[in-house]
Image 1 (cartoon, helix red, strand yellow):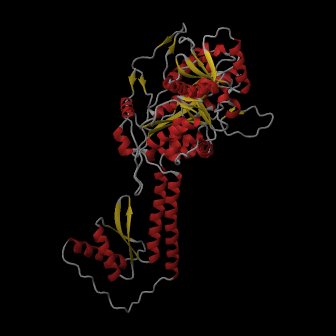
Image 2 (tube, one colour; image 1 turned 90 degrees about the horizontal axis):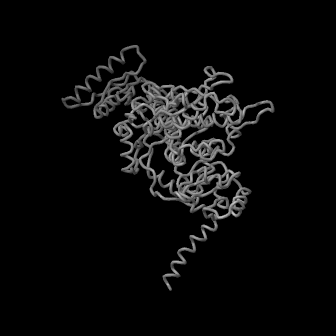
Amino acid sequence: MQRALARLSVTTKNWRAVQSQVLEEVRRAEFVAFDLELTGLHVKNERFIGIDRCYAAHREGAKTFVPVQVGICASRRCPDRSIPGGSTHWILSPVSLYVFPRESGEAASHFSVSAATMVFLDSNGFNFNDWVRHGLGWLRPAEEEEKRRSVQQRIDEVSRLKRGAIASAPVVDATQAPPVPLDIPDGADRSAVDACRGQIREWLMSPSNLPLEIPMENAFQRLLMHTVIAQEFPQVYSHSSRRAGERFLCVYKSQAEVYEEQLRALEREMEAIDEEVGVRSLIDEITRAQKPMVGHNCFYDFLHLYQTFYGDLPESIQEFKALWLQLFPQTLDTKYLAEAHELLAGLQPPATLKGLCDFMVQSAAKAQGAGAGGPLPLTFEVNQLPGVDYQLPTASVVGANGELTPPNEDVVDSSHEAGYDALMTSMVFIHQLSQIMGKKRLPFDQLDFGPLRKRTSDDPRRSLTEALPLSVNRIRLVRAQPNVVNLSGRDEADMSRHFLMTGYPPAWKKWDLMKVWSPLWVGLSYIDDGSCWVIARNEADAVNIQKIYRMIEAPQFKMQTYDEHKAAQEQAPNAALAAGGG
């Protein structure tokens, strides 16, 4: 299998050409998958006990490193190409965007990079030159508001001056003696001034009421001409203007026209702010329409998304939750779904995004024709942006005998490119829904991706929250205990539902561990080959776990409650001190 070369990402070179199309795909999407590539991951790479400690460490990382590439994939069903009672056709629109913090006024951007991450990005086809030279900038909402307020204040002031100029237009005194020309030494400046004088006289004799625009790049000559015009042509007004990088000396027959040109320039400044908002315009569209946001192992990505595009992360995770839900009320993590949903965890899928995507594609292929209770049939197509070539992930091929044939060596592996990872995340989530909906005997057209709303009794549709009540806004935490954060409610931080299971045979797999606690459904968070945390779903299951443990004769493992584990940790240093003192 070959690595993908750097494909065409969206940069400042093609942003204007594709922005409207990407925005339109986001508007039409039923959900949007999201992925980030970063300059680094963790300031401290350690295990965390407690969600607050985990959040604090990841918050520090999000304030230290920055995104280099944003990947989104807008996903929607296509009823015209779906078959009633048969397959559901999905249109996936992926895109990658290079992002680089542009300087704004006197504000300087500083961030850290990890050498290992830079090597990783390079090995996966990342184009560092395009990133630095042409990466898209952005404005946070507060920065955008400040810029707009400043420009609007100037617009209001110039508008006031324009109204005053119209009300008190000066009357030219024809009997006044002609002004004395300004004496300018011979040279290039005099030649330029004389040429402008001739153009102004010719323009004054013409019937035109349009302003006179004279291209003039030299700043000193523009300043000199303003002085000449004020002394030699008191009946007209001058103003310097810039359009599309070219500078002009503009001459007007009334003061109101000068103000009108200033207003046009300020309107262009306001339009330029729209462009400075950059990548955030796409994320704002997701927020405005309250589209579900889907990621894979995405807690760190979500912290970076907020820190980069919206504002500094608050100190407490509770504050972050409140701010996040205002922007994204429906968030899903395909890793958490794969490991925790009762209809998916039994499949024992791989943990990595690519492994999970291949696994779900293979599972769907092997289950073709399974009928009622099997995964719902799906078809996909990739909607290509101009100049961007994405292909659907190709997993192993299922042969007639049910055996899997590895993909051809010529197949290009594009994983770890943000847009492609967002594409794989979309496919994984759709396949997960296909498995869940199929086992619940619910057709895809009864799933509503919009926000939770009141329905009539005869409306068969279900929202994501109704279809996945224990999965929406639950995000997997890596190397942390508890290993999940609930963004929309009470954290799974009640450690009374956590049990430390140690000393079991290293050969035991996930299913072996889960069988111990059957018929209860438990969550698992691995520590090493012989230990893990067992997490009960509720208080009643926590009580039953302890009953099951007491009923096991000669257990092959030890189990401690969280309080027992914590007490043992606290006693260990004291015992060591006592031994040393003796």
